[in-house]
Image (cartoon, rainbow, N blue to C red; front, side, top):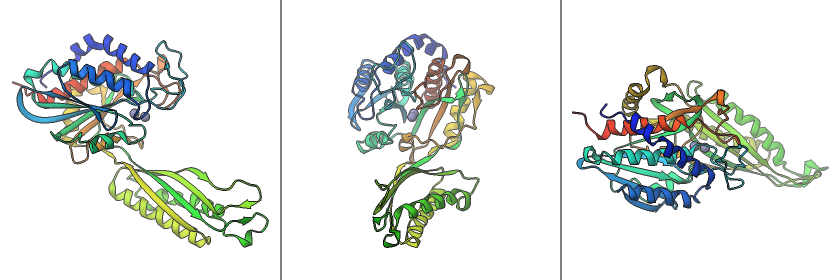
Length: 394
Ligand SMILES: [Zn+2]
Ligand SMILES: [Zn+2]
């Protein structure tokens, strides 16, 4: 490893915490991150980066051009908050009622800016360039794609991608760097079952879509239990059933909505095929028809073993063997995968929970908060890993 950024990160930590708390006080929902993006663009500009704004509506790209020829590294941070009423009573509690940074993206933005500052101090040593991508709308799974559609992966196209998520499933002081798949692909599905409505007392005159929907909800449970390989994890969830308004009326239609989570393309294909067969086949057997639409929202986060191996070695150098795990996977999804599709990369987790300090609520909980020591750990590792790729040793 060329440079250990731990000491410099510690110097910058008070300012990083202050900035994270400022973002926390002023959370902004997906594609509304105007204040946050403004601060990001101004800060990157002051550091001398070439800044592009309005990439994917509210996204910001900053390019740090090194003095030497070399590859392009993309570093990604996300900026959006969630529609949650914060239940914490800190002095940096959300000042926007009903909107809250309950996933740690306030920390990601502060870490990204701190890493940009530290790397900009080594411009003369950087071989290639670092493309900082501050992304909107991760929570609705649309921000990364919006930025890619606006050219975030062009001029220049990155050769590799790194990024992190603060992670309250893991105690602060531990980081987790996986090889291969670490976060699932997320598809959203909608199935409209159409029957023939009528009087609730005269069901023989109808084709009842509610009964058909009930059979479909039961039958889709067999996809994961009977059709997919138990070694390759998958989830099929029905999250919404809508149909009917009255005690005595059989409706004409019922709408089911749900999500599918998978790690591999092969398992995803099996789930899609079986879901379609079950929806259409069961509906038909019940005298109804089914119209299934699947929206492939986010592909799986798949870490390149060579890139994650190098990041893991840097983590071990910084924090020691016992602080680095490689066994943390989640069925949760992350659209950072959009920046890693055909571009080798590593997206790692930085443990941020502290049970003793009651900082262990899950992500998206109204009492979510994290141990801010994770900011120091995350920024030091992200900057040192970037140096591993961009600043060759003697
Ligand atoms: Zn989240
Ligand atoms: Zn998140």
